[in-house]
Figure 1 (spheres, rainbow over the protein chains, first blue to last red):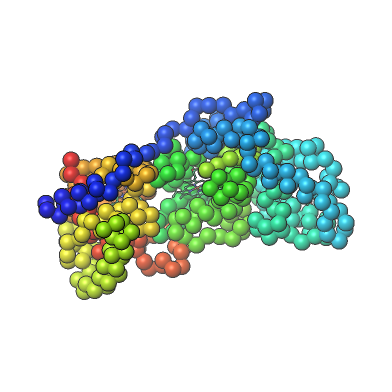
Figure 2: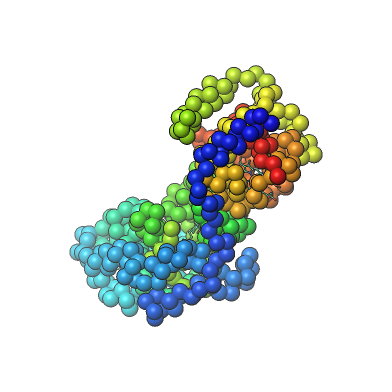
Length: 286
Length: 153
């Protein structure tokens, strides 16, 4: 027992007066109304075949300050990046001498609600396509400009700008076209597969332990309706595939390339898991 | 000794002893039966003081990520994915605690989210530099076992 007491003494001696702090364990019961006018669906009945009865936005799991930041577009630091995206929209680039606006005009009209339906089936590549890849498609095929590399150049702000044109619109993707259903199945398989030395799957954290705290983090359902999100920790926009890769890396696994088939399938499946939640881009997260 | 110095001193001890002991049981040779591993993995008793550091360290045990522990209330965030470990040394024998840490899935079933800390049954695509490696070494497991034994009701 002598050793035991020594350890106790050592621990007590180094113990500061801070109490064990755990964030609240349940998602809050609160409405998100942006700028006092735009109602955001943060909680809704799950689609058929979903493991949960209700789908819940990550917003409900964040702290009061973080939630307040998203509720006011002047306080939302992600809006500055959206404005950058707006400027890029009408910037001429590439050999064709065109900007996005040359063909698509006013994004508020042409891109309204477009982002809420992505990823969708792309007949040309016979794969699902997301906003990032659609931007690259237009840049290379329509503008004679180079594709943006992952997370580089205007990729994040332009994606955020386009998604922001769907702010408040419920996420609804079409699984009936092309082989979307097959990609959904592939994504589901990935979602439930344990990876890495820590041997954890997406579902272990975001389904089995939803609402619990893992160290300082309050586990949400891992929804994608706010992407690109503004992360306070990074003080920047974070893309969806960056988030996916980060979560996989945290299981101490090798992680797939951005826009790889594996992550595109995961995007299809996880987007479906958030069916009915409003697009929140740029959501504010910790 | 301040915390940083203590850590450095302990790191030195850990690295100088990690492969010294010929008695150490390899992960695949561990005998876990009926939720018990009867013998120390190293043939020696662990050091509870080192065990406490391993328990709290994000890079090593990171047990606090999932378990609260009132004895460590100086540490800021304690998770609640698993049960609080207050009094765990009174609830379980050291032989049982050893089995839980080594291969939680053999004790709680495949569905548990607790990683096996001295097991090579890992998930898909482990990071290249970690292939064939366990999360903790046998010595570190014994140190944590010794630490948990100090957490009495």
